Length: 146
Ligand SMILES: [Zn+2]
Ligand SMILES: [Zn+2]
Image 1 (cartoon, rainbow, N blue to C red):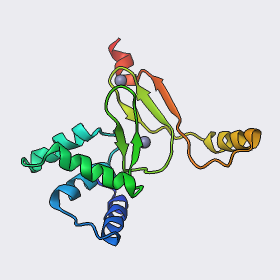
Image 2 (tube, rainbow, N blue to C red; image 1 turned 90 degrees about the horizontal axis):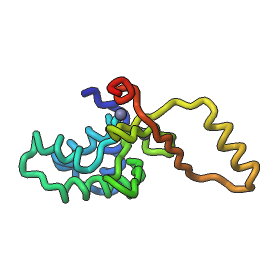
Image 3 (cartoon, protein in one colour; image 1 turned 135 degrees about the horizontal axis):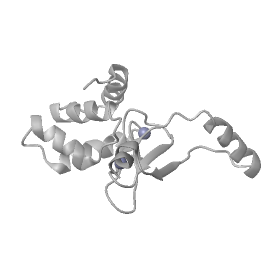
C-alpha cells in the first residue's frame, strides 16, 4: 500500500506540534488514514492495525481517530445508519460517491463544484465555509454483478 508521504508528514507534524506522542499504534492509524482512498470505518482501521499490533483495542483506535478529527487532519463522513467513515487523505470538504450496496465510497473529481459553490453563495448571500455533497448509487463493480 502506497502511503502519500506528504499527507503522513503533515499529520505527524501536527501531532508533534501539539505535543502528542507518536506511538507505534498511532503511526499505524495515521498510515492507514493518509492513504485512505476507500474511506475506512474505525472498525476497518482496527482490523488492519490489529494484524500488526494484536493487543490494540478498538477504544485506542477510536481515540486516535477522534484526536485527528479534532486537529482537522481527517474528514468524518457521518451516516445515520452504519458506521462513520473517514478520509485522512483529503481532510477538507469534498464530494463523495457512495455505493448503497457494498458501501464503497470514492472521491469524484468534479470540475463544476467551484462554480456550484459560487452560485449557491451568490443566490443565498451565504458565506460558505463547508459543504457536504454525497451522491448515492450503485458502483460499477456492483452494477456488473446484477
Ligand atoms: Zn458497490
Ligand atoms: Zn473522500
